[in-house]
Amino acid sequence: MSSSDDDSQERFALGFLFALIALVISVVVGTVVVKRLGAKAPAQPAAVVVDAAPAAPVAVEEDVASVRVENGVVKFYFATAKAELAAGANEALADVVKGVAEGKKAVVSGFHDATGDAALNAELAKQRAVAVAEALKALGVGEDKVELKKPEETTATGSNAEARRVEVTLGGL
Image (tube, rainbow, N blue to C red):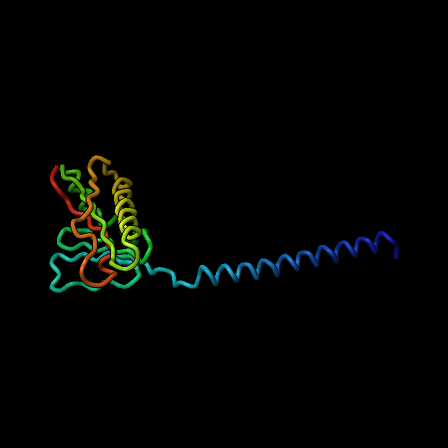
């Protein structure tokens, strides 16, 4: 064998070794990332629940985003420390969009639970209300037709899951 054949085999072996090391490193890093991000179960898609007149209060799942329409009020429920809207938000807001087109105003109020820092909770409630307002704007509702309103009672009685919500109602102009 010649010297160039030996060099070529060494280069191939080194290249293969580096590729193998890179593969092992990427598998280790990928496993760590998946374990850290995947520690929480993925949020299940929430269904839109429309109740004309519920006979009894409907329980809200803990730490799962959902949206319900109850007596004309669209209620968005949020997971702890999250401001992401549940699947079905656009469908739930359809009647609100229709009401705005008929000359009414969408009134958006954010609530929070009583656990943790009150100032942080108030800011999160505001972020959630803004997220709902942005969804309305994305559906064609003008900014001047959306009123962000601080509720008189920012926390609600009942479970923390029910307290972490944003309500959308129709009001006059």
